Image: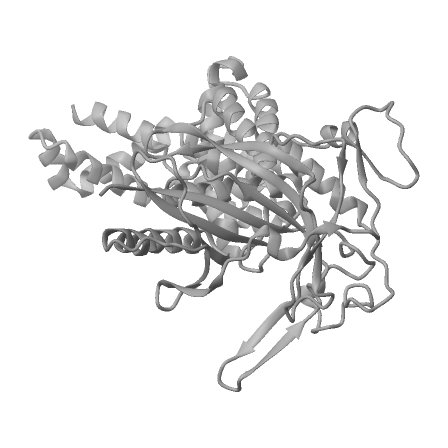
Length: 513
């Protein structure tokens, strides 16, 4: 029997507003001592009234727009009832039948087919996060920290369009990147800012019927999502082949140490939560055009303004980088992974254009940007991806606050392009630029690293090497091409890596022909 996986994701994203969702408590409680960022509202004391965080609603609407969701004119909050120690009110303020966004979609690139695939988004709604539980199995007690309780939490629910664990991972990565570009959340999975519940079921090929799903709770890394889904496909396939397919909706947890999912409980359905409209919070009115009037008893949100705040998103930026700068998909993906890196690259290109147009060729002719554009954009891409980013990671610097400026990076690339500085010397200079913010031209002089391109000086070094290394010279004359590289290596060693390698090769061939 051939079985097909059906996967849907529920993603929870903590918003980085200054205050919590329904009270004025500090929203940075994860860095504070337990139970210090709390008040009567987020602890659910009787008689307290929630006040909705308008910025959280705006950020959720902005995210909905970025995910191609439809936003209706009205939305509201609802009470979702369940009793658990991390929810002191015994209900959660969430959204049921009128979410902020619905019927959206996101495209991901399938690595197997190299084609874009559309993953539909069922809804995006806003709610408050629960508190955090700490279990001590040895001492047999649990502790609760209410600092997280009441944090604004966006929940994004996909349609069951995902077919493989890899697709699930790619969707999550693309979503996290969009959220970071919008600057509404840090979306750090390790810290729980972005958490994922994965729903999965199998069905025989050719059948349209959906069978009871299993929900894998609280997956907090891309790798964990992929591994948990792979395991669950194997477990459910075995059950099907044994004639015992899942019959109930169940909730399971991922045991990282054992590499398995473990059953936790039977899954609740919507009617179990006894939803009803939250009576203490007014409805949200999304004004679809500036002339819309709004009641004083409504939370008014202007969609026109929010649309203008959406930046160029990762997918559009990748495609533009490929078209405008002749980059490969992988190069564009790496440069746009982080918004600050993409901005730095474009600043370098802008500065590089000015450096090149002011530069003269050896014959006295002016270099033109258009003639050399793609060679230069690729050179800049290579140096940022292969040299700068690994160096930043090694030094634990972030690109936004490093001392190295886009102008200095552009100057370094122009020196390499004009052959005034070779690769080896440039690699020596870059860490110094990063530490001090110094100009590459000054460092090149101070450290005596300028490339030797003077023909007479190179000839003197080459003649010395030829005299001192008769064997590789004789081998080359006998037709062994590889021997020439040994001679070039000797020249580079004597010149301390400063000799222009192209000129060295040219002069050597002339002298040995």
